[in-house]
Image (cartoon, rainbow, N blue to C red; front, side, top):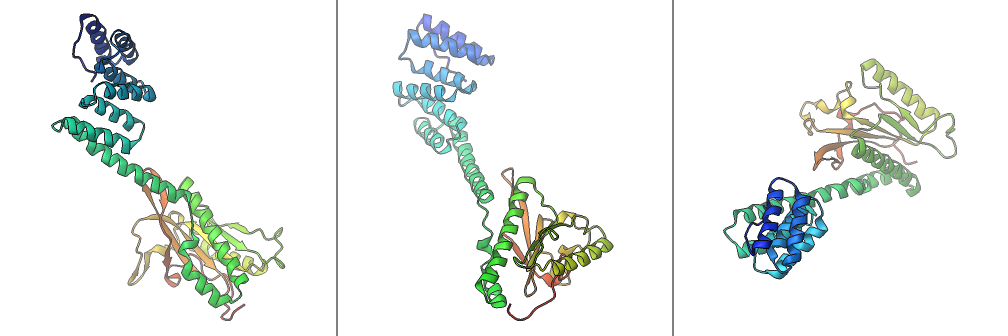
Length: 324
């Protein structure tokens, strides 16, 4: 609320009129009257404080901040000037600066409940803002490779040749990161199998590297039919590896997350999606859980699953136990 203390009779009239307009929500008229009063008494801190309050309501934040600063300059030890400045900085989402202003206001008026509430609120807003920025950074800077160090060793053992296993790792990382970015943007992924073609043998015009499988999980029959097709596709296309991506919420069959016996599903009802890597020498399965935080969809770290218990589709490639 704008201040209503009186000074001279001329100023008092303009200020009081401004206060009445402020109370009725007519902030533009209030600001105009405070401006007229300031012209008559340019060294009165109350007038700048009142105009700052009106400008804040009008969302003219930079001008409001100038008035709050002038209020403090004219009357440095007045709680209201620092409080007003804190409110404007809060609106600007400059929470650290706002907190500093409210803390100064509290020094000059420790009994103010209004100031105490603001300090508590700003502390929480600052924490929320920091966490929201962290979430946004995680959403923007997707780096799946950092979660696959163990896989590098397994691939190296299975394939020996660095060129061979690095191709497969890059293929998996790119597929995972594409899926995560899609999930962040739409909270969904397309049910697909991505194939890694053989540069010399695969006829990519005949065998595109992406196969849609959105109907594969509706019934045991569609699942079996899809698996048979994918296995034949992998063989005839001479693909070196395949990577299946599908959202958990479209799987009616098989319900892989239910687990078997003591190997229970560890992710409760979490939303998310599966990524299953298939190659002749190595099979791996991950679940990437999802949550909603600070109004944003956020993928959590990938969780390695027991593929023997939770495979989304059976083995696609004929098994090889020796290095390529």
